Length: 225
Image 1 (cartoon, helix red, strand yellow):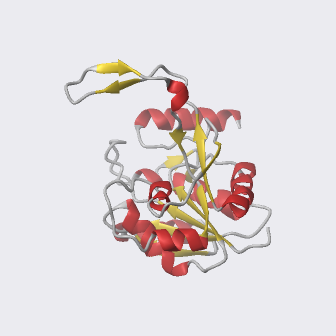
Image 2: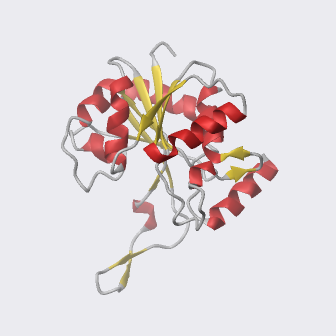
């Protein structure tokens, strides 16, 4: 990789849906906090990546204590999160330079493979904006405000994953926009500038851990891999 590469890892969850007093990103997953597994995935690539970890201000000390307690010397920037994901990622933009590549990743997706990360960086280098997707396997219905479900073709839909990878010039410009509720991820922010997106194949194992049953799945994945 001949461009400078960044990874913005957003870990702003509170653990409410998990039903845990510990924020979900700090839950222990077979001996390691989830967020540590995610950060290490980006630090162990075949080319250097500058990690920017975005955490709520209240959890910064918790992360620092983990690093000290484990005698970790992880090279990364630590940024305080904002009131929404949009604002959290925007806070990280101060560390991003022009002419680089930027991956934005959910802190609670620890099973992203190095191979997949590297392929997304390379594809973004060619196309400018890449998002990984997986095809739904279940039947789907569109639900109306009245709660009535109508059939839709699942072939016309995909489920979006992270990391989403962009040329930094594109991402920096996108985050100059005013916030909108339709900005649910970085792809939607970039689309707001009229930039086309390239879809890449994601992975069913790249799960987002948000509920208790996700932890069961995560332990099962670790037991195999």
